[in-house]
Image (tube, rainbow, N blue to C red; front, side):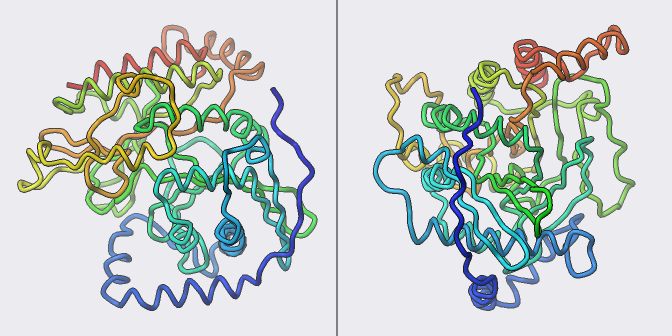
Amino acid sequence: MAAPSPRPREVLAPSPEAGRRATTSSSSRRGLLWRLRDKQSRLGLFEIGPGHELHQLTCMMQAGLWAATQVSMDHPPTGPPTEEDFSEVLIQVHEGFELGTLAGPAFARLRRSLGLAEEDYQAALGPGGPYLQFLSTSKSKASFFLSHDQRFFLKTQQRQEVQALLTHLPRYVQHLQRHPHSLLARLLGVYSLRVARGKKKYFIIMQSVFYPASRISERYDIKGCEVSRWVEPAPEGSPLVLVLKDLNFQGKTINLGPQRSWFLRQMELDTAFLRELNVLDYSLLMAFQRLHDDERGLGRSLIFRTARSLRGVQSPEEPGAQNRRLLPDAPNALHILDGPEQRYFLGVVDLATVYGLRKRLEHLWKTLRYTGRTFSTVSPARYARRLCQWVEAHTE
């Protein structure tokens, strides 16, 4: 099935200065103490300020996203979802660049179903504060950013990856409706950016799995294999924040206690869905945060917040098939599981790699080169099974 390719609708965007004034006004009300605390929590991250090679690009992204979100605020989608929601392309013309919003109404509905206010989305991604950059351990050529509050993650994508995401978007939304506590990363928007008459760049926005990050001690990107899955840890006392990989996790265990059975089942449901889409190369992101003494054993007092995350669900399945759980009364609750001693941030990301001819040829080449070793490029069925086996073997 080909990705939707309707004729783009072009409009003149509001002045970026309007966005800067709005977000600056909002920021000024936060107070000095809030801003100092916010800056202190950015350990290991780098502000993309004037002089940074990506500063001009991120300023255009911020101005464009402010105007794009204003459209969904002024004209929120109404009525039942339609096919046009998933195929709409809105091009906003700014001074010096154009920003395209792909499947805007579909993503606006998805953000609303997550309880995410458009005003908050706009304020975090607009010109109110610089985007943040971190030292990526990914081999991808993509650029990665965080919003200034670290709540949202931005990543540049190839055109074919965006086509795959948009093709799968209706089924992705349906999966989240059936399984509202899914571990799949919440994709919040897909956009294109073209400077003058240059080549279009594409980027996506999703909720950050590692949020709030202030007390996180370790971060991992797990694929369930061994080739190219080691990262040299940062030196003792270094401010760098590195995402480690499978081989760095050897000898460690995820101690979830009673939540383990839910986690194993949800991994099975989510990887089965990705297998049906013929997708591979996704990762399980994982981070640790040690619980304070007064936070342990609070499982019995967790607030049952299923109603919020189930908003809009029209699933014919029995409730038991949805693998519901108690969500902690905390920001980013969908990606948080509390064990007896630690809080875990868990999410499945990178959902755009299809097992096509190029990946099949890569599989044959790696089979010859890495005889007897496990590597990432295998069939979607094997990839899903192997990651679930890794999770089962490393949890208790």
